[in-house]
Length: 60
Image (cartoon, rainbow, N blue to C red; front, side):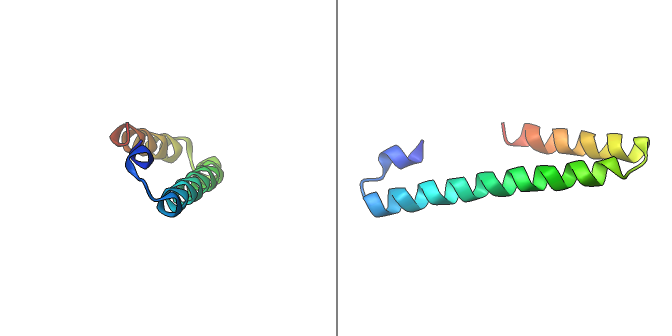
């Protein structure tokens, strides 16, 4: 993790806070996507799931 390379404790704390904030955003967006997908037709929901899987693979 990049934080191990940072000597400044304040900057390291900011990095940790930002990472936590982004994790919360990810979880909240996933919940919104679930709500939207539940309201779509089966075909559209499958297409959305395929897109989400492609995006997920880009981050791994």
